Image 1: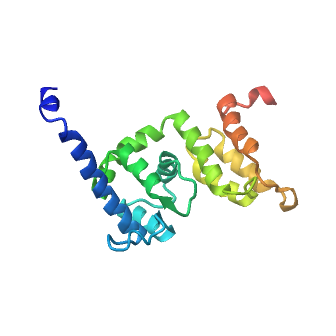
Image 2: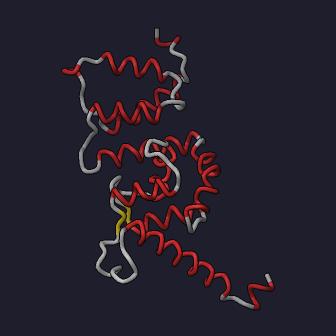
Length: 196
């Protein structure tokens, strides 16, 4: 504590140094150099997102990517703002790819919490539908296949049920239906004996 009072500027300088490093990383992913930063729109596009995932050694289908978008409070799945990127790096206490990779086990542990999973599940829905009122049936099924595996007691039965729905009965999935799937799992815990 004495060190802080003797040198109160030491901590803010470190934060500025880290944020400058993160800013350089962001600009590289956004495809901007320090010379043309004023001309940039301040976002990482889809190609930059792909480069980010490659630098972090993550596949786009890794569920931790959805958790990353949740931590950023991302508003789009196809571009990231500097603020969103900074939120993620601050949460991970990372200023470069290697520090982020080193923190991945902690992120996976956080994501394994059921309440956290449910928040991410809802955020993924919002990201994928963007401006639409609901998700297409096909998109919802793809996301359910990805996100429910290992998180939904009746996963196999649910996937089989979805495959049996005739094309003319496949309707878009609204937010309430999306949430009810997880609520159904929470209530039944895989036991349908009460419902027969």
